Image (cartoon, rainbow, N blue to C red; front, top):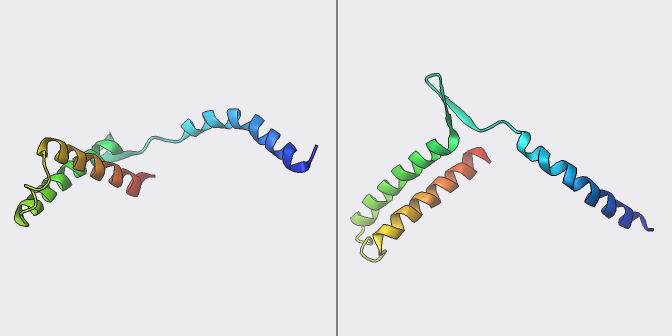
Length: 91
């Protein structure tokens, strides 16, 4: 058996033992006035505020009518901003 084949086999055998260890990290929480909040809640709040700000900007430049239906666009923007903030600050 070649050296490369042995290393592939060893890696394949070690992988199932290493995967459960990925959950052993501390949860990302933020201390606000002595109370710990999950970081995703703060990212969601910031995403909602950024979506509201983008609506104001889109109305100001007269592009809101082109981006319809609004009931799908603004929740999608909120999800986009929330995930982007999460990846930027906590990943």
